[in-house]
Image 1 (cartoon, rainbow, N blue to C red):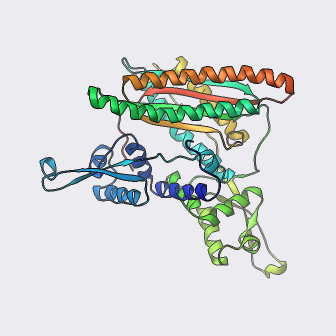
Image 2 (cartoon, rainbow, N blue to C red; image 1 turned 30 degrees about the horizontal axis):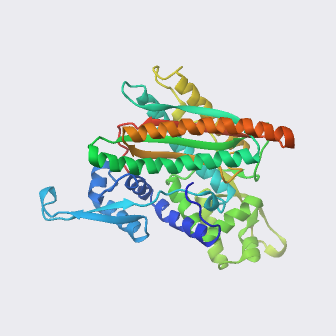
Image 3 (spheres, one colour; image 1 turned 180 degrees about the horizontal axis):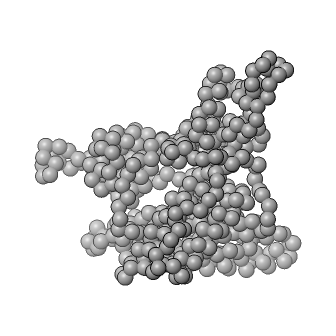
Length: 411
C-alpha cells in the first residue's frame, strides 16, 4: 500500500494496469528491479536471465508502452556494444495494491493472493536468516508481536506502517544521491512489514468458500491477471463468493456478455482454480440437460519446504523461533479467515538498495514503528476501558536484512 487512489474509475484502472505486469511473471521482476535502479534489457538479461534477450526486450517494450517503465538514456555505439546502442529504463512505481484497489478484489482472490505472497516471502525470509548468520551481514532481527487494539488503534497502527513503507523508498532515493558523491557501494536489503488480524478465539470468518483441490502449474500472477483485466470475471468471482451459481443463472441475473461468453469465462476460471463445481441439477425446465453450479475457492493452507530441516546453525536460534512463530500466526489467521477480513491489512517485502546511512535510517524507522505500535496498544487499553469496545488482535511482523548474494534467475 502506498499513495491512495479514489475508489471507482481510478482504482479499477489501477487493477487493469496491474494485470499487465502480472500477465507475465518476468514483467513483475523487471518492474521490481528497475524501481531500484536503471537497467537496459541487455543488462537485465545478463544478470537475471529471462529466456532470451529477445523475450526480455519484448517485455521491456510492453512495460514502456503501458507506462510502467520510462526511458532514461542511451549509451553507444562503441565499446562492448560495438555498433549497437543500449537503452536504459527506470520503473517509476512498484506493482502493489493500495487499500482502495484491494477492496475491489473478491475476498477469495485476496485470500489466494495473500497465501501466494506468503509462500514467496517465507523462503526468502529463511534464505536471509541463514545468510545473516554469517559474519559481517547486517540485520534488524525479525520480530513477531501480538497486540490488542480498538478500531481507532488499528487505524493508527496501519497508518504508521504505511508511512514507514513510503519512507523506505525515500531512503533509497536519498542513498542514490549520496553514493553519487561518495562512491560507496550500495547494500541490497530486504525489509518486511506485515500487519494482519489474528483470531481471538476459534471459528471461521468470511464467506464459506470451497477448498481448491490443487493449484495449476502456471505462475500465480499469471492466474491472477485475467481476473484483474476483465470486469465480468471479477463480477463472477465476487458473486460466487456469496453463493453458488450456474452459468445460466449468472447470465439471467447479470448479463454482461453472451451465454457463450459467460460459459467461456466460467470454464477459464474453473481451469485456473478460481471456481469449483459443487453440484449439478437435471429435470424441469432443463429438459434433460445438466445445470452445473459453482462456488469460489480458497487455497489449501499447508506447510511448505521453507519450514523443513533448518541447518544446525539456525535451529534453536531466536531468529528461527521467531520465524516459526510468525509463520504459525500467518497460517492460523489464513485458516480462520481473519487474515484478509480487513482490506487494510499489510503485507510487503521490499527489495531496496541502500548505503550505510540509509540502512541505519531504515532500522531506526522500524524501531520507532515498533515503539509506536506498543504505545498505541496502551492508549487503546485506556479507550476500551472507558468505551467497553471489544479488542481486535493485530499480529505485526517486522524485520530488515542484508539480502542474500545469490541472484535469482528470471523465468
